[in-house]
Length: 151
Image (cartoon, rainbow, N blue to C red; front, side, top):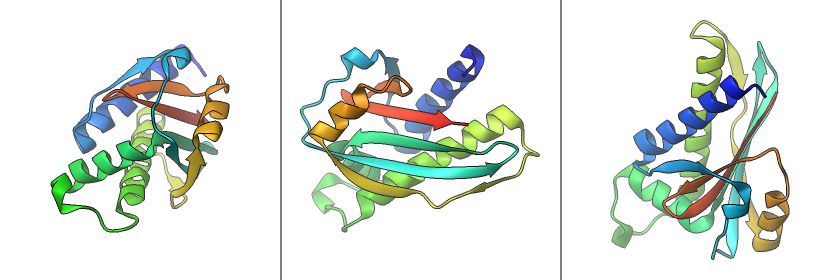
């Protein structure tokens, strides 16, 4: 990935976290990615068009709840219906993917996006992903977040 593309991807991710979920993100080094969480969610999707590829994001499960509360504008005391937190993560990833593709290829480029999916990850699986060098790592409100786009 070119440095210009990487910088654009980081900016898009930070902007979407702030504008969609009212959470602040900043890039950190992978070795700074520490979490007290025992469970995580990974959301992933594919795209085809001028380019073919995939995107995925990994977040602590507690952060998915905060995403949902902020995106929906609800109070944590109201609770969440089952699946709502995962849906919020899928919407975040879908928005990030769309904005990255538009930023890289322009408004006229046509892409087919798959429906985002989520899976649960354990702490061990999270640590295994942390050993992968192709993730961009963010700190989002003191939570480690991994993001990757593959063309």
